[in-house]
Length: 509
View (spheres, rainbow, N blue to C red):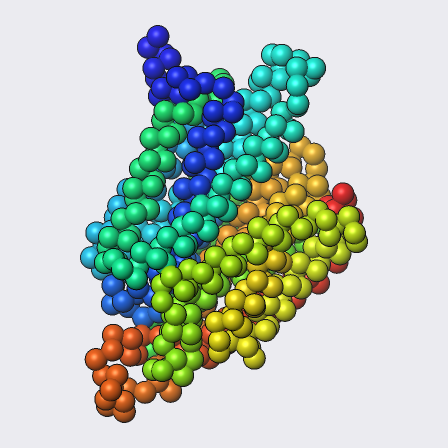
């Protein structure tokens, strides 16, 4: 009886369908976190008294931490239990969400924002938990008892991803509506409440993976050395970009050479990490897969795609909120109007994911994916001449969203198909990690681009006395910076389209 209670009350609800239902709420929460903050980024910048360009560091820091969290906690979940690690990661996300509400200065907010990124491991843990449970049931009942574990896992995964997308759309619309009528701190408190309910749902409604136990953890077998070196490498690389942001690109400033030294040290740490991973019997990241001729084009495509799908979210929001009467560019939208733009993009992603199988049957999987990549490239390219009206921006983002949705849905499957059968899970996870790193680096570079010439050509209060009291004067990113974002996103998408030509045919089977 006591052992059953230690399951956290999950057995009161019982059954795989019930567990998937609770996990769907977890993914709904994940979607809320992913969609909620984007329309608020300009308001967050004003609340913390920083420029619009600085919010790109929020995305970059969280994405970089996510790249570390996913492989580490996924491997830990296999040892001590997926539910246990799901609870740990949700508790960290809850603490970080609360810290965002009370953070007094930007650097505290930045640290809390990064740690909130622990939610990225939820979906991999949920998929693994469902697969292990269905496989155990299949072994006990026999193949004739019903659908196989793989089929049940695919159905559950579709439901979870659907819940995530619904949460993202709901979060974006809710945040946009609330920020126009409430104080920013009150608006920031909403995700903390949702994550708190999510933690309760996991404790009460999710059973642990069969056979999992803390006794299974073997510290000596866990790749702690690899984790150390990849952490050092990413921290140094991110830190170098952050220092460069303050120093600028002027070699006569001490900060410039400090950033160069940090970047060089980060590269050396990355080399050391590669050597450690090659020698470890059970590495944190299987480096050898990056040299596989069948896989490296998929990984490279994922990294290039991460530049736009993850790195361009903050610039899109801040550009929409920029007042054209002050700066001569931007849309000057309210929070809710910005959330509608974000929502149209998210809906287009869902439609793109759903249309991919149809397009693959009409043409071929490779051509369908190539067309999706070109949609992203063309959509961002359209921003160069068409960005003055909300309708133009929405049209551009719909084109980008259709392609992005198809890529999000198909790249993990392409990696799994191209990998050896015994490494499909690892290949899928690496695809996500590479995409995340691409987005993190892009976020930092975009922050530099928007900040470097942020004040260039912007009229000051003395030039325009009628706007002297505006809190927006001198806080927007530079227009040349936004042009850089759109050009880089378009160019990387075109490069990804070229790489898809080198992906082996079996990846599209």
